[in-house]
Image (cartoon, rainbow, N blue to C red):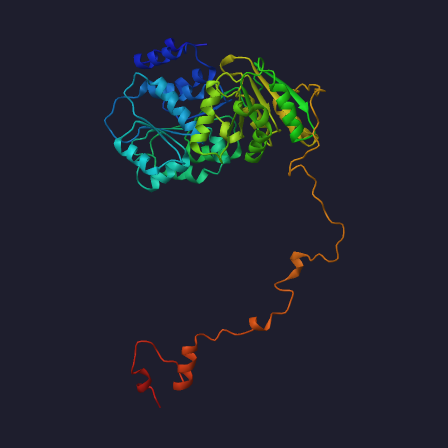
Length: 449
C-alpha cells in the first residue's frame, strides 16, 4: 500500500494527516486520488468503513487554493444530519493547517442562522439535499463557483426520496464541473442518475457490496420472536469484557423505543438511542456518548447509522434480517473498521429465514449458526406486528363497507329541508316580485311595472 508521504501532498495537508496518525492509504483512497486529480467525473463503489471521506477530500484539499470569494467552491451532499456533522469534523481535522471556511447545512435547525453563515462566506459546504434545496429556493446560496461536487451515500439519498431535490441542485450548478459520487451499492436508480448528470466517468470498485469483510466474524441465532431476541441480547451483553461497545440495529423507530423500554430496568444508563423521531440535539448527544464510551450500547435504525464513523465497535447485533441483503453489509461494516477485528451477530425468526438465505447468496458465504443458550428465557409475549390477525369466518350482521353505498337509512325530516337562502331575500322577493339588488336604492323604482 502507498503511504501519504509518497503523494507529495501540500505541507499543511501532510501535517494535518500526520497529526491524525495516518500513514498508509486504503485501497479506495489509493485508487480515487489520481482519478479525482484528473478532473474527470468519478464513481466510487466501496463498502462502508473503507475511508471514503478522506478518499474524496484528499485530492480536493490538495488542489484547493486561497480565495476571498464568499461563494462556496466545493459542495459535499450527504443523506443525514449526523453525517453532515461528522464530515465537517473530519474535513476540519484534515484541513487543520489550512485557512478554510467549512460550513455544515442541515434541517432541524434555524434556517436564518444558516443564511447568515452563508452570507459571511465559506469555501466548502457539506449539506443534506433537503435543506440545501430550501436555501437555493430562498436564493441564499450561490453555486456559480462550485466546480467540484461530491455525493456520498447516494443510494440512501435516492431511497429516502431526495431525487427531486438532487435534480434541482444539479440544475443550479455550473455546466463545467467535476462530479464525484460514492456509494456502497449500484442500483438501477443510481445508473439512471449517472446517465443524467455524469459525463464519461471513471468507475472504481473496491470491496464490492456482497463481499464479506475478512476481519468480521459472523454468527447467527434462530429466535422465535422479538422479546426472546431482547432476552438473548441482554444475556449476551452481560459479558462486559467481551461486549465492550455494541451497536444494535432494529428495523424501525417503534422497535427502537420498544427495545429501549424493555432493557431500561437492566441497562438504563448504558443505552443510547438514535432514530428520526428524536430531536437533533438528542441524536447528536447519543452518538457522542456512544463514541466516547460513556454509553456501551447504541440502538439505531438503518438510515440513522448509515455512514457514521463509530470507532472501535466491538459487536454489531442485528435484531432483524434486513429486507435488502445489501443493507446487511452496511450494518456489519460498522465493526471491524480500520483493520480491527469485528464481530457480527444476526437474530432471525423462522419467517425471516428466506431473507437470511438471500444475504448468504449475496455474500456467497454461509453464516454459522450458534446454539440457542438454555439460560435465555423464551418469551411468549408478542409485539402487535407478530400477533396473528383474527379473521371472522362468518358474521351475517357485519356489513361489507364496499357494498354499503352512500347511505343505508332514511333521512330524518329535519334533514330533508331545502336551503332556500336567507329570509331577507325571500321577503323582498314577495314584496317586489323580484330580488332587490344591493347598493342601488332606485333599482326597484326604475324596473317597477
